[in-house]
Length: 258
Image (cartoon, rainbow, N blue to C red):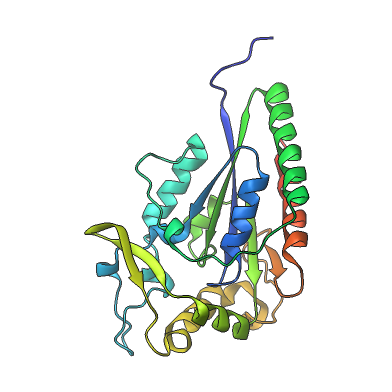
């Protein structure tokens, strides 16, 4: 049997959204381990350089969280459209994620190994049956479901929900975030000013996500369906291993469809 050395690619784009400190990057990295042919993208890498972040009109500090100015939306949307066609991260793409703190939430290695084997089998079977290579592209971010052009590129949509009190404590325990800087390829370390969570971060999260929930209740409301197929994980009620298992079941089920 002749095998095409450069088969066409089918890219399945999986979004993991949620507030800062909700566990979205942790889940995304576990999925990256589970999925045989996969890449990972961090929405934070599409924030404007620190010098261009706008000041909050009331508090006079840089506002990294208001949806309109927090992400360079045309750049992110174009990037995802390119990934959907190629399944390859451009050589020019740079990430600051490796510089940031990420709380370790381990998953049993047997679980990760099981899904790695299952996903590799799916890739082989799909290539043999359809002559097409499957690539999973995972993107995590705190504003995954705000921009319609970005949403339209997503095949699977997951949202992590965590109570505000837990998010606040986790945020305060972090030492800062590395951000893009026009003059420094390694970026700058951003530290929250006093009351930044209460005045900037959480209000912006509510504004950007209230359309997803009935009555705008981001803490307890049911999904409105405005983002089709959105999967909601109540992170403090389900352990991470179950979240990985159930998400992987969904990913592979979707991937088997032609």
